[in-house]
Amino acid sequence: MSGEQQSSPLPATLTTRILASVERVGNKLPDPAFLFIVLLLVVWVLSWLLSYVTFDVADPRSGEALVINNLLSGAAITEFLSVMVTNFSHFHPVGVVLVAMLGIGVAEHTGFINAALRALLNVTPGRLLTPMVIFAGIVSHSAVDAGYVLVIPLGGVIFYAAGRHPLAGIAAAFAGVSGGFSANFVPSSLDPLLQGLSQAGARILDPEIVLNPLNNYFFTAASSFLIIGLGWYITEKIVEPRLQDTKLDGDLNDLPTMQALEPNERKGLRAAGIVFLLGVVVMVATALPADSSWRDETGDLTSGAAPLMRSIVALIFLLFFIPGYVYGVAAGTVKSSKDLIDGMTKAMHQMAYYLVIMFFIAQFVYAFGQSNLGILIALQGAAWLKALAMPSTITIVGIVMITAFINLFVGSSSAKWGLLASIFVPMLMQLGISPDLTQAAYRIGDSSTNIITPLMPYFPLVVVYCQRYVKHTGIGTLTAMMLPYSVAFIVTWTVFLLLYTASGLPLGIQSSYSYP
Image: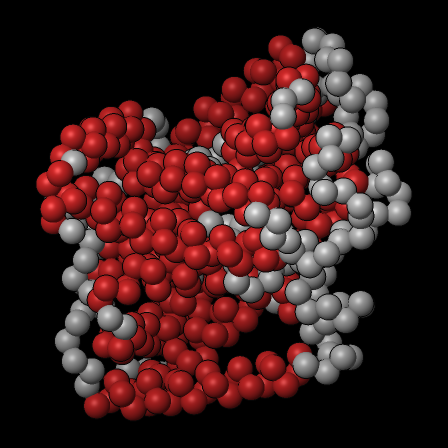
């Protein structure tokens, strides 16, 4: 291993210089909150200028000509001011993060997370720490956005407790949670969501076509091994070595250390473990019956409409709150109910900066959607790809790249595919490319650039996680950390898809259509 490092010093040096440049440039950008103020102003001005332009494209939602709405008109400004509060209070990432952090705050304050991580590190070989964190990030996709508020911060804590740089742990977890968003061993609510949109697009040509909700499952399961392997290599060979000179200057007093567990901590962990297992048993027992109230109207547990999937954040809250409380009582760290409130209060104090950022992101997302600029970018990109009329292999690569580019501006996976599926799917069906393959290409592009765009709603939250350890962490720092993952994922994953389909392996459970 050391011989490999000595034989190629130039590439390592070149990579380090490129990433350092990215970090310097990125950190010269304004604070994330102010950046979104600037972007909001840009959207307003662009909407005003482009509202006078006639575009020869149809809005797929209405079938009428696409019009850019002028957000600087009197009516638009008064409407914006009237919904400013609800834009923020109803912004999905806000509630998800805060509710989950209330439970996590209790578990952290009582010492449950500290003791549990130390116990975990005692049984996890140090060499397997990185793939374990990435694996946890990938599996967290089944819980929708849970990975952003659960796995990513724990990645930093676990690495720090193991004596490694915590930012490398955050990077590895972020790569698994967000960069590998479409790689998963376990079906998630994203599968039927994208399948439904793909099927709607395919029925433009074939009204009888039916796609299986798991039409990409075999490919996404196989992709999990690829993402874990790539993430493991990049973390330990590129990201972590580059972080060696980055000093920790945050508040590290409350972070786990590696001393042996005390008897009272072991007692608390046993009690919390028993309660946790009982909770799992109750959950499984109540979810298994065909008429379970956790299921949707069709009896599905994993659809977006299923109460189980809609309760994930509340379950995360209970997952940490109840075992954390039981641990505190058994270990003697909880003396009164005030200890629980103190834990929640401390967690909310740590989220103050995040809330400021989310206020401005919520306003930007609203304005961007109202202007129709995102739809214009998506439609013009799709029209450009169609005009090229390239071979199917190149077309698939084009779908990946265009999706990756659009993802830098439009973060929601379902929102993008809702627009693009009606164009890409029927267009490629006419070229003999199946809806399943088109959807798989979309998923690669959608996942790979999540980790390098500050416009992704959870990106500022990850910056906040990093600032807990390194106060001067900015957009550039995080982008430079994640860029190697993004480039490796999009190139290698695309090649993997082409080889996978060339081998004749099925992408997922068979759908009812006759396209190759």
